[in-house]
Image (cartoon, rainbow, N blue to C red):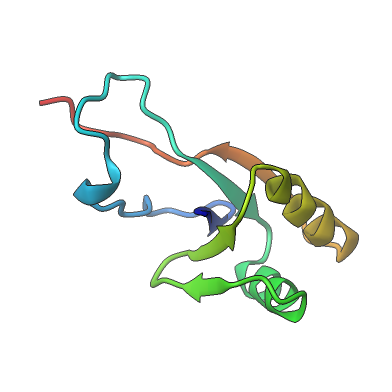
Length: 97
């Protein structure tokens, strides 16, 4: 099982990812797929109504997913409910030290 980060479109602050989430060895091409939505609160409501396991963080949501196929299921569900969304790389900067 994995998780899909869900963020508000147009966010000003980057999502903080834990050092535990980074691989031991990574190059400048490290990325993390997430979902940008037009309304984070509405997306939260729609996902919970369809019984997805959603965890509210301080600046984003984490949705438990069983497979990559569920990503498109979530996008379709949100789109059907009038919530603009798209899958994108959410890592803005990772320090290469």
